[in-house]
Length: 520
Image 1 (tube, helix red, strand yellow):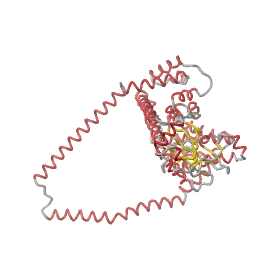
Image 2 (cartoon, helix red, strand yellow; image 1 turned 90 degrees about the vertical axis):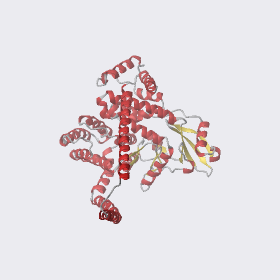
Image 3 (spheres, rainbow, N blue to C red; image 1 turned 90 degrees about the horizontal axis):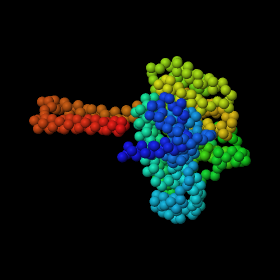
Image 4 (spheres, rainbow, N blue to C red; image 1 turned 180 degrees about the horizontal axis):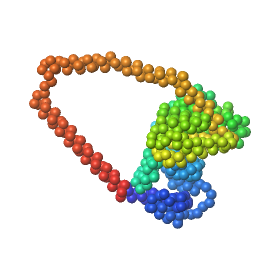
């Protein structure tokens, strides 16, 4: 029954996509398997022809919150949906009708244990509604203005059902399409599922806000709202109210006399500091989530989607950017190979040549035409040429970098991504690879060695005790096992062997069941 449920819901989604004429034209899908090509041609027959952009975005919005999130996620995968589709999906906004105010009050009481009238002196109607939650303005009994974010009732069950459909489709795609396996649609769906899982628990968002607030405490131009913990639970998040101008309102920013060129630099440089310096960044930095205060400092909201990079990935990002800034393509190629992103059987010199073919046409353009989005698009095209597997941990980074560049260019049409990025990247590389960085690395190594030495006396004591025990046994005539002991050991070994055989049989049956479910 689950199989037919997946098919029915996916068929409905296909019907909606067809009505919006959101499928690619059949001539663009020649590489797809025959059943997919037939499905696309049938979709074209029932499609309602429309003009203009946004057909796919409109279809996903009609399908509901889960598909809106899917579309926003696919905006990070131009390798899967193509650059044009990815650009369209980046504009997809999850503005949805708000749910009832009475229902919002019920969610608050269920999570915080008290009515809104007891918790707040004032509690207003919803100001903004998205796919997962909506926001209300309220005032505490102590007179503080706060923003109250409330999860949509029943949203967890809706997402769980739709995500199971997405996994079903991803497994099917991997089974029938060899080229699609390199793009790892199942892994991509798992990344989406993990992201949504975190968004469904607003305590995780509150924790992310506190972590980032600690990271940027000394940054002069970036601020994070404070969490009101007594009014926060799994389905409710309360923060202090932000008095700022949204970056989406250019007229208001100009009317307040704010320096838009400086704001553009702040957007890019803040993102790079968070990603490279901290390894923890806001992964949904579109203009609707960014505000400017009266001093022109940047304030971010909505920390539901966050990205993390480990030390290797942070160094990789910094080296890549710095290599392109310096036009040192051999260095960029070496970083790719050192990180394991390019298979070792490929030629580094040829890969460097491909990178030069990407970088030189971009670098020779006027400053306002130098685009990170164009660079990433062409890098995606190179991945297939050099058998590079998709790196899921870098998807949010790539998507966010493109988004923040778009925000910066909106503020300053002549914005130069590279000149703005260079100071932050250079400072971090000099710190990590220069003399100070070498000293830090030596200190970390010394600390690890020191921890080893602190446990060495205990380890030596344990070794001495074991040696003494064995020597005593040997002097007493050797280690002897009586009949009862040997029979017990034999019985235990037999039970262990049987358990192992049973486990192997169970595993084989499970694999066969999975294979049959994919086939039928």
